[in-house]
Image 1 (spheres, each protein chain N blue to C red):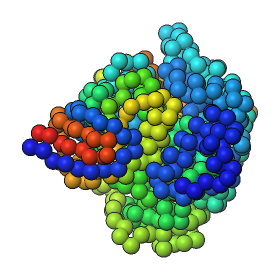
Image 2: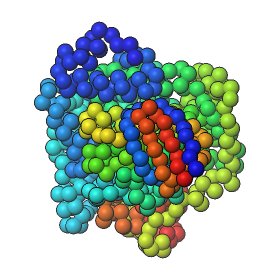
Image 3: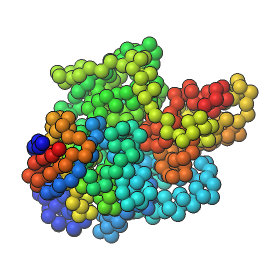
Length: 148
Length: 425
């Protein structure tokens, strides 16, 4: 079964990967800080308040979320995990991207030559439909295909 | 975004490649949010990144690049608190080794970088730069390029300044360019409320839990709070400002609130009243039961949930001078009442350097020290952000600290009872 969605490209690219889904806002600092501080090879979500992601592997996954929340270090945290190469491969936002995540994506692109993909405005139906473990195909025009 | 000739020239490299890249980052960021232009920053800056964590290599590399290019911030800036204070927050040898050699190995280097780019002064390390004693106090309508979520929400809501929730790095970049993209909380429309929060509690809600409830519900939307003036009054005195500081910080960390209005109290709500509320605003009712539900939802992350607390942090964000005074009075009175000479848990009260230095000259400071309480200007969040401190049973009355660490949250009165020996944790 396949379902297609269309969003706005913040940082484009073609990619196929596995979805990991947070139904609520992702607290960037709380999610990534432990792995980043440990200089870990992979990110395991450390946000106690996020039952969808807590304890799960995020590196290389396609992170589907409404938006990010929390500390204004958020953009720098995203830039840092991108510079370390332990970032999710893509971030797919159902809502318009927030200022902190947007900063992180643009900083990573301009200052770290990161290939992280970011698409926003995919809509509530996207987040209602997609489930962790789904296969996702992303196209550079902002098309997102969820395959189950 | 339409740029002026001067802005376009910077983007095209007239002032060097580094400044062009900084401008490109700001312009691309503004474009995503539909900003039509850049507007001048009208007040001093405030940066969120105060910590020389070795792993944040991009920060130090870019700072070096900025310094090498001879670039400085257009206005001076303050910065969040330092992550270490060995004098007042004692560490064992292993902790010190981890802090100085591993965690914050770049602290001295980074502070030198900050000075070269435009740090206001040595006492500029606090998350509450907006306190009079610190002196980075924007006026109504000022345009800011601050980061630090608790400072942004305070400046917007309590002072009526205009600032988006800028990220670390973007705060530095905007300070350098002296301009920010005009969108969101910089615009009249962006400051209108998406939510009406109806306070129907039987007493003044705990600020930290009320802010948490609001943040968890509205996320980054703007709430208009009605019914709180019944308890707080209609005047922004020191106690009310301190309450709003803590409520706002909790709303910004539990959600991502950048601005709230309180009916009859905060400056824009007083001026524009309910015209600030959007026609389609949703309503969230907060009563005693709802506050209890939110409080009960906080997980306890200690390995041994019955462990005896080893450390207590009060003041994240940093305490105002009136809060520091009140805590000192309550702790000393509580100890006297319980016939105890020292607090039962090592306790750190945190406040801005300027407030701490003034407090150190008082008799209360001496009495607190004798009672085992230390006053520091450390960042509790950065202190608890290490593998060793993270495993230690720490208690706090800060919802922000709870959110970003494994510290256990207690209400103000509960904390007071625990540390003065009225009740065991």
